[in-house]
Length: 436
Image 1 (cartoon, helix red, strand yellow):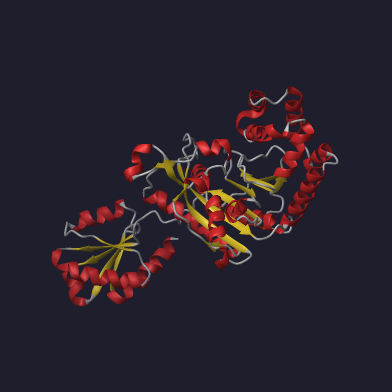
Image 2: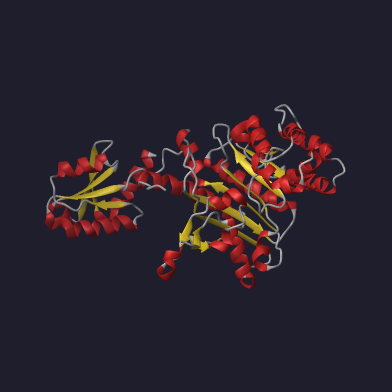
């Protein structure tokens, strides 16, 4: 859990602003939920490892001594969404599309791009089983990343029902399949040998382990792995249905800006237990882990409502996006790194009132204005403005105050000119435009 200094916050707001604009272009509506949920709401939704990473909140007051927990910090934004849909079903449209950009908390071991408190940027569509839902989510993710400056990302896609069919055909017993998925989800982190060892530790027999790794280790030159995997699952009806769904999603994304970015990857497992259909994950070459992921979860709302509502969502991980963008110097040079466009400097304390009036005029013109509060020597005030990267200083001496003017000093060009106070704003804006 971190503090964010001003430059950090500006970068975060820049990224969030672009993601939010893209989400709204796709018709998603904003939603916010509390940081805290009832612990029963969260437990059992994320698999065994997820349960261990939930930050639990102990009972308070007279129950404090029990050492029991009744609340927990939000682990993701999807389960709270399912709770909201169940709770407010009568107030929400049948086809509900929402975006949510808020922090979540996980008691995880910190690493590069991995924190205990981090923001997720979610979009979810509820009410339809159409493959167009997944295709549009992939398109929105692609648009957001491209507008941020990414061009080397890949959206990997797979299907939970296809994974089940593969596990069954490989000889993994039904009661071992969740364990197998948890192990396979780590393939990109620990490699084939690591996965094989974990599968063995979880009691998966050697013949099944070999079959699984043969299916999941994709040949880099393979043009269409989906055809090969479809042949492996053979006549399994569930597996063939999943293959058809994946083909429909990939075909629809070909009509969007995500064309060429979506790639079937049989090794993609994603460990969250609530996924029921297609699963997706975004990767870039120089980041261990993903920039985001998601999938279809048609049964999750039913856990709260008693009636299933089809749903699918995708989430971008803000922290990992920021890590990569910082390392690649992807932020625009025009991104504001100063607290103000202009600083007002006065020669003595009697000029404070005039400074406030000029500041108000300049702010109405659309400028960010900092009033230096102390009557220090003008040289010190200008030095302060320069140290903060403020490009203009508005000097208010006795003569300017009497004449209703202001002298504007351009610190980078080392020039200055005097303007009527009502015209100074336009002159500074023009100077900012010339600076780029």
